[in-house]
Length: 410
Ligand SMILES: CC(C)(COP(=O)(O)OP(=O)(O)OC[C@H]1O[C@@H](n2cnc3c(N)ncnc32)[C@H](O)[C@@H]1OP(=O)(O)O)[C@@H](O)C(=O)NCCC(=O)NCCS
Image 1 (cartoon, rainbow, N blue to C red):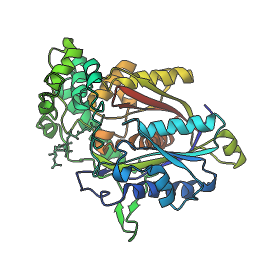
Image 2 (cartoon, rainbow, N blue to C red):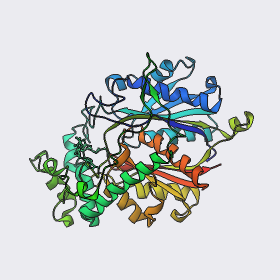
Image 3 (cartoon, helix red, strand yellow):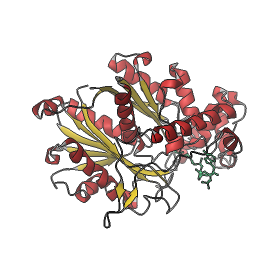
Image 4 (tube, protein in one colour):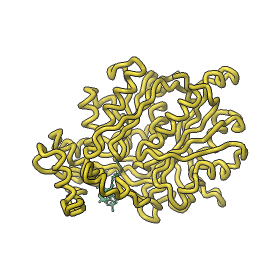
């Protein structure tokens, strides 16, 4: 694909509880607008040239409704000629935005597109739009009962034979790598401090989600997060969620509830934005892109297991780029749950030493619509730091889907 990334920027990710958190007081349009404003500052590009702004956001209601992309363009003070639209591919939304932007400029239809994502989970937590996994379609439920993600994650761990200790070790690794990355300033290039729109006071300058005091012992003491959820009788005929998962996968025998708050992605507020240009635009303006988007992909996978799409999406993107998994220097596999990364790495036969080398959403949080765009910047920063070439970013999503993108530096 001929699509070039000029820069990628993000807010810090803030811990989010309902109505609480360092970024909870901002309007989500302002959170996104501050992120957009960074792009021309950093690249010197004339924003009047932006053909479109594509923004991933999952809960498109209330303050996050009303086409947050277009409103953030206006809130950023950008020319009114710049359009914007929001999209929802659940947790893959921010990377889907990059895919669309890349397709737009590679096709020749567009020259300069901003891709991004935003989610303020302190206002709109999981399932804030009330749609659940299937919009309450009872007929569909009898064909495919899409159990909640936590149950899917525990089912994957059960089927793959992962132990609680293995998942906890992965949770600890995420925390340790994220804390090291922060201490070494590895996130600094992509980060900007979010400020209060009126007072200019810095609200948050660094990710505040990691827990530096995490230990194996503390993780081992945490209660499983989804046992009670699994026992809820929410099936069309009064079946529990666990029973519905087992109906699809009887060989599991029982759903082993192994994930905890220490091995699941954290609830967070945040936004990210990426400036994507065509080859012609890059040439005409004498720009030096940070990376080329080599390939993008989206796949559907089993909607009950739900979170096993990343390996499929990765393979599809690799095939389209004419690459093999072993060609990839760095992987960003979204840490929706520990079992997702472990299953993906196992399926692709890749070394965990190349995966999420600066931690992931378990430690840093997962602001749903934003994470995909944030991970693109994380991958680019680390490729540059290491002097390496190729990164693959992938995220699982609700509904049994996944998205991926391959980035080539320089
Ligand atoms: C798993 C989940 C339910 C936990 O929610 P929660 O209980 O609100 O989680 P918290 O992060 O607040 O942690 C709760 C407690 O666990 C303990 N804890 C969490 N992480 C810990 C760690 N790394 N080390 C030690 N203790 C930890 C703490 O005691 C914490 O309480 P505190 O913040 O008061 O100290 C929630 O994070 C979740 O749903 N995650 C998945 C999100 C998701 O599905 N996203 C879409 C992906 S497809």
